Length: 220
Image (tube, rainbow, N blue to C red; front, side):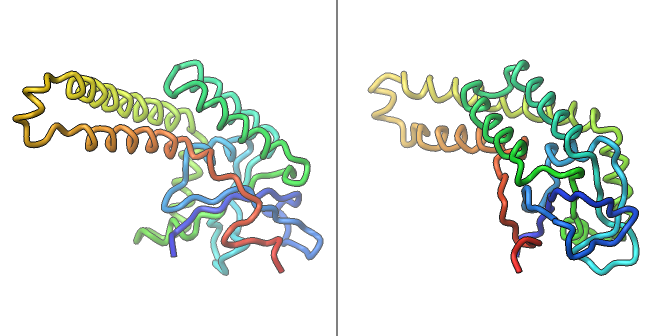
């Protein structure tokens, strides 16, 4: 089983009260082996620690943040990414459209985003509550993570550009050079380019919105 972070929406203040049978915990997204930048931004307004609804753990190992304000902050971030030309604009525009369609759905929107990261924390030896404190600090300074994200994507773009130039050179090589070359490398370069482009999408963390999660509170 993959260790996942789980993102939900809730209407009750889990920092002040326990969940009742009437309180809905609606599925938003889950992510394998990581907590993507999109989750951090969505949780970055009025961020607070809370106890888990999945884990029976004595310390707070979950986080909450305002839904509407966090959602709008994500939209601002995505517009910034779009304006910086970090991605193919047509592809990014479609992913942003899907993101807005999901997060704006009336059957998903509630007062708060609620993030469960116990399975991610479990991958490390540090106590879960200490990792939750570290995540809270990172979210409170989310602009630093955003800048790091931009640097990572720019580096990926540089790697893609180098391989695209190598691919163009390989395709334009003379037939004599191709004839005597044991390995032109075109399939390998194409594979590398596709992989790096996929890594760019993964870095965003906005292509896995779903109303059914592995830990789903809507399924009885």
